[in-house]
Every structure is written in structure tokens, then in C-alpha cells.
Length: 570
Ligand code: ADP
Ligand code: MG
Image (cartoon, rainbow, N blue to C red; front, side):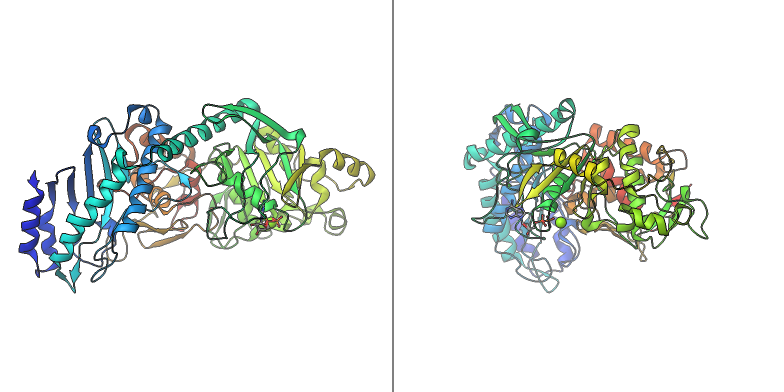
């Protein structure tokens, strides 16, 4: 390996040459405390930073992280996640930012969100700690700007590395807390099944977020901390935090009711994101949900390919069989039915719904409407007539925010009312109300709920090359996947939180495409992706060692695939 001094000399020789000359720096360079490995430098200063591949490698012993921090998977994931955050923070503080054309002068790493995720930006193993970073080699126009490159590589980068990747320079309490917090949350989530719960929200949690676009906790003097009603309170012993108490939501059908602005949606959002372990300070560190919980909503306009929605919608006028429902522009109700069917197909165990984002005609059909419009003239079987069957026949629970219709009282196991951000158990009260005011609406639809037909997705329409023949799989933001010439709109996938996850899903689709050969159904393809990543890690998804991938669920993988407009199903 060449020395860092040789790198300095080489840089001086490149000054003023065409930007492409930077590519002569490809290879390994040995700095006093670490190796800089340059796998790829783009030819163009405007190329997205992710097209370059730069790695920093420090011998594990020198980095100084004790063995216990990586003795089990969750701890190792949390350690790596912590280091990614440190690097991100230090690079933001130390790097002076853009200096020159395009991405000149930037030093950064994929920005982590509120969830502690397995991510490829930091690797820790017995031999080394490796950071995979983004660098924008600086340019004047399209010419090498060596003086700035020298500042970046010999002043800023060494300082960022020193302060973020060596244990001695990190706050040990902070780091330990990060790991212990993740361990507790993971433990708690694994306990849910034994306790018969689908979700748990610890007392003292801070649920509201800063804003619709900021996932950081709302910091205001009048924030109401979460407090479970006595009847739903559950106590659990955790490995680190000791005994904690909070509200347990049992499997079955749970309604969240209450007036507008009383905190219903905020509670549901906490449950949605309880599939992730949150960073310390998030406010929802001890709010967990079963890993197979899916937020389902209506999204009119989406494409649907041969999804079996017949359990919910039948006899659509002038349409063939709704067991292979196809649309390039689905309505609110059909998109919601498709979302549910596709989630069941992909292994969902709990459905989360908020009336704010549901199709009204899918959710309710009251007595008066039943009198006016006969069932034979209504293709939709209201969800109120299906929600119990989902649980009794398929063991799929539902948590539903429903402030608008009392018809759901009769099908719920538990009803929670939010009153000024405090949950109250009103199940008993509603039993009284049901007695006094019977709905008299008739149960409609079939007496059982058929599982959706399995589908076999084909690779035909999934072309990862764009109109110029370039391979393009990218995620500019969490809710958008670029796959070849296709732009996949993922706005409705509320549990997809980072662009790194979206990109990893895109790469996974690319990776298993050749196995979509008409032999495997969706479930088998999901399992294939999961097995592959479990055995070989996320790196298996890219032929280069990139730092912009993060873990994702099979449920989101399937949801993305189902929203690709080129999808063809056998
Ligand atoms: P709903 O769905 O019942 O209409 P939301 O959950 O949307 O109510 O909450 C209404 C507003 O109150 C939101 O701006 C939210 O951030 C805020 N909020 C939610 N929970 C709390 C809380 N525990 N303390 C303070 N503000 C909260
Ligand atoms: Mg709401």
C-alpha cells in the first residue's frame, strides 16, 4: 500500500489537470492511524456523491471498542449505527462544505434517521472498523483543485475520523446507552408474542413529533407524557432499564377513538414505527410493535396488478373477476383493499389504519345506506364485516383509529379513548352503549374470509436500465425509487423511513430479478431475499462496497414491488 505522503505528492502533480485524472488515486493509501481505500472516483464533479466509493479502515484493536459491544447482533448493529451518527455529526461540524463545482469539497456519510438500523455505512468485525463515506473531490470547473483536496484529505478527514471512530474520543456513556437502548427495545419486542400483545407503549414516552416533516420529538412545556390506563397496564423486566410499565395492546381488534386533536393519530404513528428501535432521546425508545405490523391506507391512483381483492370487493360493474384485480389508477377503496390483500400475502400479522387516510366507503356502511342500496348493488363489503374474521380465521390483528363511526364498537375487543392525549379504557362503557343503542345494521359479505390468491411476479417489466442504457437504481428520498426509467411513488408507505432502505429494496429487486422466472410466488421471493441477506449481509445487494444501504422488511420489499408500474404477474 502506498503511503499518505505519496498521496500528497500525487495530488500536487494532478493540480489543474482534467477531473478524470483523480482516478489515478484509486487504490489504498496508508495514513498513520488508518487506511484510506479508494475503490472508485467518478469522472465528473457533478456525479452524485454515492457514485464514488471511499472507505476508511482502522484495525479493530486500535479503534478500541470492547468485545461485548459486538457479542450479539443487536449490539453490533447499535454500535455501528452510533458510529455512523458520530461520523455524520463530526463531518457536518468540521467539513467546510462545497468548495468548487458540483459536489466539490463535501465529506459526509449517509444520514441516519430516528431508527437504529443495520446499515452498510459502518462495518465492525474482529479485524477492523470500516467507514464507507461520501467525498466530493474538488474541482475548478472540470479541473482538479489540489489545494482544497489536500485540506480535505490531510486536515478535515483525519480530524473527523479521530473524533468519530476511535473509542477514546467518544463519550462512553453515550455509546453504551445507545447499545443498551437498542437491546432493551429488541428484547421488549421479542416479548410481545408471549404476552399476547401486538404493541406496547411505555409510560413516560413522548409521542408527538416536532412537525409533519421532522421526526424529532416535540419539545414543548405542554407535551403530555404517555400514561397507560390501569386496566391495560403491563409490567415488563428489561435487561438494562429494569422493570417498566406501560400500555399493552392485545392481539385482536382494537379501536382508538376520541375527539379531533386529542392525539389518536399520534398514538397510531408511534405504533407504526414501533417496528424500529429508536435512538436515545427519541421519546419512543420503549414503544414497540410486532415486526409484521403494516400501516395500511387508501392511495387512489396507484397501480395494482392481479391482486386478489375478492374478500373485500366483488362484482364490480363491467369488470371481470376481482380475484385478479388490475388497475393503473385504482380508486380509494380498491387501493386500500389491494394494500390489505398484498400485506396478507407478504405475511402481515397486524394491520394499522387511521380513518384520516382510509376510504370511507371501504370502512363503513350504516343501516340507512343498507336500506337504500341493496348489498347486491354494492361491490364493497365494509371492513367492519371483515375485521373480526381477519383475527379469528387468520390471526391478523387490527388497530384502527376511528372517531367517526360507532358501528365498530360491536366488533372490537378493546376500545381506547384518547382524552387530551391521555388514553382511557372505555371498552366497558361501549358495551353499555351497544345495549342501549343497537346498530341494527346487518352483517354483510361472506361468513369467512378467504386468503388472497398467491401471485407469481415476473421479471419481464422490471428494466433497471434507463432510456440511455445506464443502470439506475436509486432513492433520492425515502418515498421515491428510481428503477431504470421508472419512478416508483412510495408516498403511502409510511413505515419506510430512510432513503437507504428504499435504495436497498431497489437493489434487492435487481438482485433477485432473475429468480422471478415464473416458479416462485411473492412469499418465496421475500424469503429468498431475507435468507440471502441473513447469510451474506446487505453487501450482497451491490457489487461495490457502498455505504448507502440499510435493512428493510419483506413487507416493504413486497409493497415496493407491488407499486412498480412495469410489474407483470403470471
Ligand atoms: P387526532 O388524530 O386525534 O386528531 P393528532 O394525533 O393529530 O390528533 O394530534 C393533534 C395535535 O396534537 C398534533 O399536532 C400533535 O403533534 C399534538 N399532540 C399529540 N400528542 C400530544 C401530546 N402527548 N402532547 C402534546 N401534543 C400532542
Ligand atoms: Mg387524526
